[in-house]
Amino acid sequence: MDIKLPLTDETVEKLHIGDDVRFTGVIYTARDAAHRRMVETLEKGESLPFDIRGQVIYYVGPTPAKPGQVIGSAGPTTSMRLDRFTPTLLAAGLKGIIGKGGRGQAVRDALKQHKAVYFIAVGGAGALLARHIKKVDIVAYEDLGTEAVRRLEVEGFPVIVCNDIYGGDLLQEGKARYRLSVA
Amino acid sequence: MRDIDCQTISETVARLCQEAASLLPEDVLQALKRARQKEESPLGQKILDQILENAELARKEMLPLCQDTGTTVVFLELGQDAHIVGGDLNECIKQGVSKGYTEGFLRKSIVDRPFSARINTKDNTPPVIHIEIVPGDKLKIQVMPKGGGCENMTRLAILLPAEGKKGVTDFVLRAVEEAGGNPCPPVIVGVGIGGTAEMAVSLAKKALTRKVGRPNADAEAAELEQELLEKVNALGLGPQAVGGRITALAVHVEVHPTHITSLPVAVNLQCHSARLKEAVL
Image (spheres, one colour):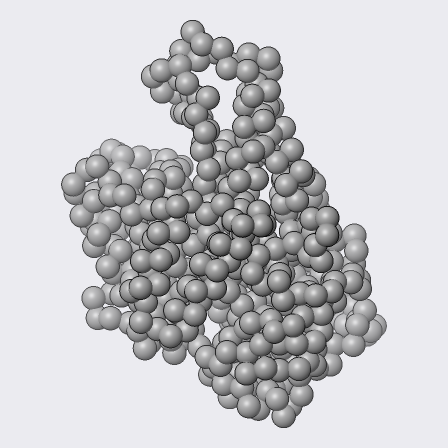
């Protein structure tokens, strides 16, 4: 399924776990240090460096771009580390997240509550994923280097729906489907 | 006595860092292709296709396979009749890592003051160096860029001797299942059994330097590897843990004698991007 970003309620309502999705539009990068700053900003009642409503955040810290490249390798990092910050950003209007691996119960509940979707990209496919990133601008926290918040323009960026707004969890259901009794 | 020059070691390490980041070893590639044939889950198949396509693209254009170009783990087998000249061995390895990561446009992921300020050292140093003294007059260097996603899932237990093989098996299965999608399955499972606490972890990591799926020379250990692989794959996690038949490409077990009161067991996972390059000087 091809999706134009930003995400709307109408779009996320159509998404179910296991769906193959290709994003075209703008996504923002943020990982550990940037999340800490964004949550601190919101807690102080100040506004974020970009309007987060309807947006998608990608958990990525790319390699440096070689001369002539837009970005270096850019695959997802482990999402679990961001669990403690995620519900606050979802409450602020974040609509989609791209990472890898499962999420804790609090995040799963918050996704359902705020009608947002958690997507996974293939971890360790950073060279391939970078091909779908057409433009990169640093929008905040430049001092954080690879962890700075970047605005990416993507075309056909491939992700899979992992947690939908209906409470479905691809990792739990997938494991149950393929589990054998010998384990 | 044979002289080995520090400058040569440094240059070699720099080259290995860059090659390891982009060139997936042939044994890993073949294991992934076999996994693709065996995988039954449609999503799992798509993921393995992307992983294989990524490896081809990285090789062709010398791009890093993964943005996490890792902690640089360096294994050295130093012949006792070799003589390192022209500098400090540890320092020249460090310089090699710095050069490789800087000139190769690899990500610098190492931070100093880890429990407080977490300041990036900006050249991915220091590496983690393991030195083993062996017979001969050569120096074997293996560079393993080890990603954080899989390294963070490392587990150690000191079991009771009475827990035996079942205790070991249950512990390994729990470690892989709890790791879920974090270590980027399909993984290679390194298991260290015996020795002391730190030795078990070290053995588990050393197990990851073996060619994928090459069995342990000891028959009992090889049998345990087979049994563990079957059980790990029966967990149903599959590629990226979306559900599937192939959770692990291989299980490698290393065993060492231990104390009469003790049964240490460690699990160190390697992601599907199992990067490793070696040279012998």
